[in-house]
Image 1 (cartoon, rainbow, N blue to C red):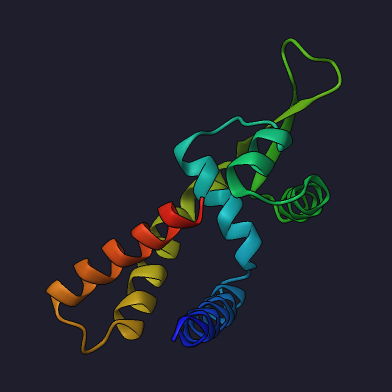
Image 2 (image 1 turned 90 degrees about the vertical axis):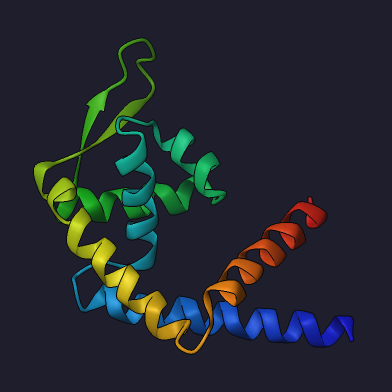
Amino acid sequence: MNVHVLTALGAAVRTLRASLDRELRAQGLRLGQYQVLRVLWDTDGLTPRDLSLRLAVEMPTVTRTVQRMLRDGLVRREDHPSDARSVNIYLTPKGCDIRAPIERLLDNHMERVLDGFSEAERVALVRLLERMNANAK
């Protein structure tokens, strides 16, 4: 039975990531860029290392993603005030302005994915996933 849970969970995660990435691409974003934006929308001005830790991804991944975001005008880079070897990443007005439309896109995406789930089932699903996450640590 445990293998079936892993198989089903893995398939769901892959499918959800792929479908969300497709929808974000239609808006000119990649999933990784959205994840950086989400963190910066909550806490602007982080270092690449901070982003790497919060997103649980390797530094080269963050560096490549931020480079694309700089090119696309979503973020800007400033020298770190106390560490000459580092920089802080800040949202640009464009990076701030896309928050509302991207959050609407995510809400619509999740409504489609959870179509037919009752409110109680949605709450239970979140609780179960949170419990799995806690147990895995």
